[in-house]
Length: 91
Image (cartoon, rainbow, N blue to C red; front, top):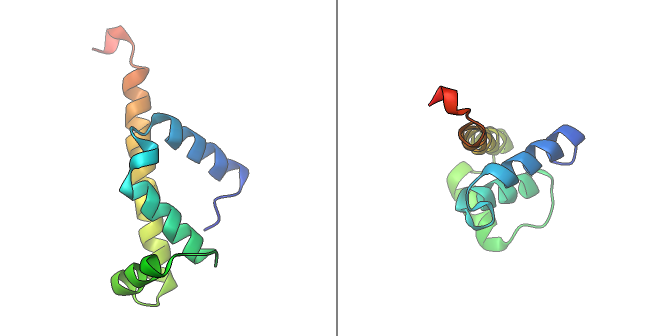
């Protein structure tokens, strides 16, 4: 899954804005590592070892894990956005 399409970029901008501690989160880092692995980009040896230990060499499992992780990140960001835009009448 490449994260370079326009809709993907918009989603990641949204996640970056509304996900607390975006730049310090292990789950965001894991998403980046899995994405780079699937896109055949550079991945540190220790990260490759983690991927092979966690998923073996099955890229389908890696893809599924990445999609779940990204969905969880987007969900959390959406909940934070909703909370920040909640009208007083909803409270």
